[in-house]
Length: 522
Image (cartoon, rainbow, N blue to C red):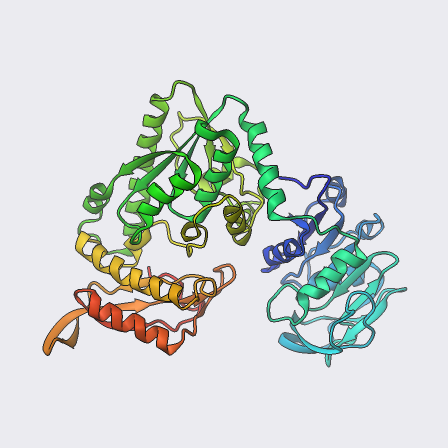
């Protein structure tokens, strides 16, 4: 999707920042459409996209380092508003004739900033507040005609603006949640300095995508979509269903590794909400047979991935063979981060190998339909709500492709899956009751199947299994912190699991951040 005439477009120029995607998200939260472009893109190519504004991201380099990305001065002469952040701020200052120096002082993490002149950018922002910094060099002199807005103990020029030229910048990261008033600062640039229109909404997304899908597939085209039980494939399928109706067929492979009630959600609730044609394949025995005796985590992953592709291919072939007309389109739930991480969306080929269904047979030729290709996870959830999908699907926590197969430490058996499913269901139920679903990013429950621990249950000695609760908070899963659940919630979960789930006599909590630990155990 590109920005339509009734939406303004903001380009986020990525200089290697770990936060480029977050910047793009924050722009969209200000109801302005955004896209990420590499710093290697020429100014002419950027301007060809007709952006309403350009944001220069942070980056790991020093502006003085050999081979460091440069900013073409032409970008500031094109009449397009520009906002620099961190590295982008320093590159901007240098390109416009300001001074950037190695002052010998660095600022990393939480830093107090003093507003000396609010201007437009920092209006309605407290004169002293905390921001998130990450830099070694500093701007020591602003370019001619620019007003210095803020400083810190180490940085004499921490923010500046030139409203007449519609140029501004800050040394800190306004996009991260640790920066106070960061979103307000960004909105001041977007709305007041750049004059962007806040017209990008979920309703727009739904309406525009339905029209786009109809245009792509046509009046008679047929499509197929693989459902995983997760929100991405569900929303993608719902959008296509809204566009072409019964010319879409969805395939759901029940591999037996989903959590309690999730297969039923797809087979019953999703169909009820959308009316989609659903082809269900019960492959539970096949997956259990393939996983028998396997304990190595990576081997488990490879087996599950291999079997899924084989089953999905067979299901596709079956659907296609029974279709009176050619099925020419494949629907995938590719998200914007997938596009960026797989090469910036330079073509569909790299997405096919990256994302949902993987190794498609060479003799099956599809045109890809990726209705979520420009969206982030939180936007996808809102689209799902707009389409009337059940909350249990829309707000489902991220769940790994191999499912419970990598949440059992040891061999995967039907008995162990049943035990873990019950424990997991109790944890999810109590989190929902406590109103914590949307505060927690993910909540794996891990069965230590190859570990036995001594316990006392019913006045008798037991040797049961421990389970590990792994609740985490995160924005994007790249980093995560362990969730500080209230003790009373933990108590209810622990008591219910040990009382209601056979063979579990010990409940533990994983309080490791990421890094060093991953969210999943395997």
